Length: 422
Ligand SMILES: [Zn+2]
Ligand SMILES: [Zn+2]
Image (cartoon, rainbow, N blue to C red; front, side, top):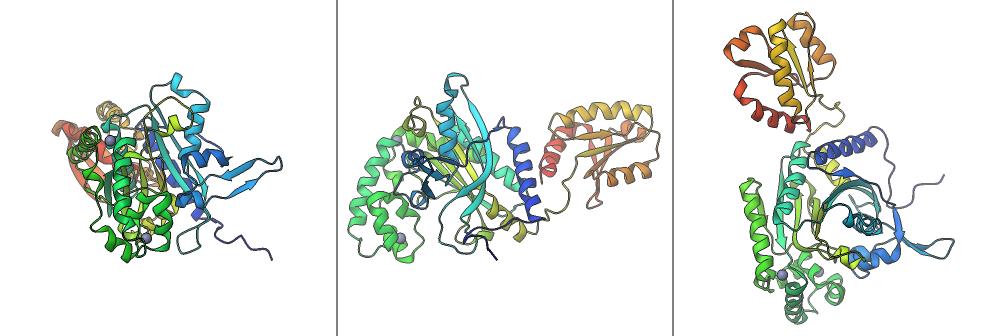
């Protein structure tokens, strides 16, 4: 018998259908923000990753690299951004579109030390936006990731943000950090001793207790950020406050990749323990130029599908249930249909599917139909309700009923939007 190689897994039914479901929901949700799906190869020239991810970073060290039959050095992609940036530059998209907003989904490959929850082939869903340096884009992209995860049913998430500055201010900080850490080299763990030479920022992120102790008195990047980076970051955190997205500023937050600038963030799930980020990303304003394109600000994030699935299972979210199908409008009589059509357009404008009953069936058989067709909500629009200006909203899962007023439809639609994507 031949087993699967170490560190990879078969994804059987029904688990495979959960992957599909997550990608579908993510795609639907991201498209509300203007993102479109693209597909790029799972392997690239090794050189691409050496110039983006970096050879000496933890991720760079974990690449699957081999010579193909033509003698070219090829690597399986260890992450999604480099390939997307390569495509952006190769197709000269900067000359055609001011803002390019895309998402992707698929497997990534890293030669990880096998342990629970770490696979050598794992799935990510990511988004990238090119051509926009406004801090409001950072806010919007964090909101999008946050609301998507919440909508999936992940309630116990927390956003952590940090700014790692631009080329100029980060360089000064790294110098200072190295002066400080240089005094403690013999105390740092072996990984961090290597990082000290190639990727000192990454030491900030080390989980080892001795490294953490050393870091307590280490210089902080916030004391080195230049005024324009500081202003940018203040707008990001201010924007998150305005959107009421709970977040903490974590001065130790760094990313494992070399190319990040300014805003970086992680969304952590309390179900994940030490590998707690279910989503991570940030700004990478220099990468397009680094890969041969014109200077182009960019930002993005990736969600780890296995980690998301694991958290959802822990949170008791049942993905085997078919996805809710929007709103069924139960109508009684001609006037009621007339009203329903108007209300439906408000709800549909929020991207939610609506079906209106146009038959003479009684209410109970309409409810049965809604149930059979897997609608999650029924809105009952009887003539009495029209007179009162109040309609009855019934949740088909919980059976709960409530009255809502005509003026509340915008709010109601937003609420449904959250529910329809959960
Ligand atoms: Zn700066
Ligand atoms: Zn360490």
